[in-house]
Length: 465
Ligand code: 6PG
Image (cartoon, helix red, strand yellow):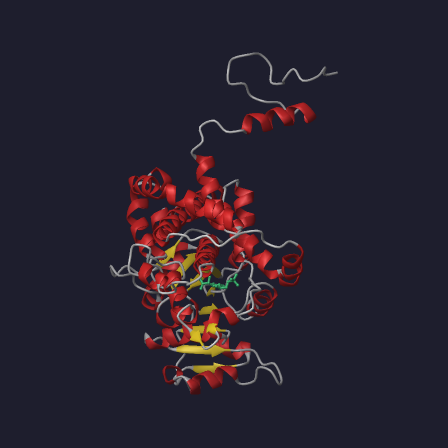
């Protein structure tokens, strides 16, 4: 009879397989499960054990009860199936076979509110449920992802040794594993990670368009930036992507410009709206994806509304400075969203803890993120820091120049514009909000506040009955 396995991994897709290989390489005895779907998914877990030498000793299953029985108690089951109906179905089946004291970990991109509900449901029957955001894609999952965990602290602690073994270590040797609070905290932090990711990706897409609009585009530029303080994982892969040349030109030019998304960017945007936390860059990036998805309509409109512009050169150093400043504002908005959520959901993690978890293994790892781990230790509002004030003073004119250029070139830069508009608004001591208050009061009698000490809370607009 086989020795019982220490961990079970359920779901042998790309992420489930890679995490299993990572666990096995750390010497964890595994049981692997994948569902049986005739003609589509047959013997998948067994195939993984043959395909990957590190999984040779793992026990493969496609019978859920047998899989659960193969685990030592208290059981630890890492569920790696898509969020939504897929995980819902799996959890419904799993609850029948688990016992009090067991620990379930959802490593998918589930919505944090769903995780909150599931944690409660499982807790009611004595089972711990952890929601764990996993970032870094296939390579990260295999060699060291960033892990953002939420749920009961005690359950987390019983797993933290193994989780820190499989998580990435940052260049200072700090593990990119964080516990962020109860219920859906881990999935919330992962969701905001993805929101920041959306805006970082779109900023790079806008830089790409700027470079592309030149008569002789300098595609080595991004690679040069990668050797400066602008370094990031996303900049690095973008520099690599644009280095793929074909006879016809860049390979990337052969990819259809029709963007997709799996939902976390819209969840971040919705949550930011609910929290009243301006995450304008995440929202602009999300809308840019929606607009990009409307390919047929864009092609039609391009024929109907021709661009009336001339090609104008743009200084590369100016573009870089604008990009660097916009990235700071994106990170500021992301951390402000986390701050608002911490207060709403009574999570007590430090923002620097989130930054630390994002310094390696994940998609938004960067030199800036490393810098932010130290900065956020002493100051939780990035715009108020000495470091930001310096970059603001040095780069604001470049941001203005790039956006003026984009207007003249009639080139869309929604995320960089959102960065500038946020900055212009947040540093404005006297805004136009007074007029909005007056309008609301005029048409709806909603009331207003005066700057001086006059009586009443309505304007003299009309006779009130
Ligand atoms: C990560 C990524 C990942 C995300 C994909 C696709 O951290 O590894 O954020 O979790 O699911 O990048 O996301 P979209 O389909 O929404 O772009």
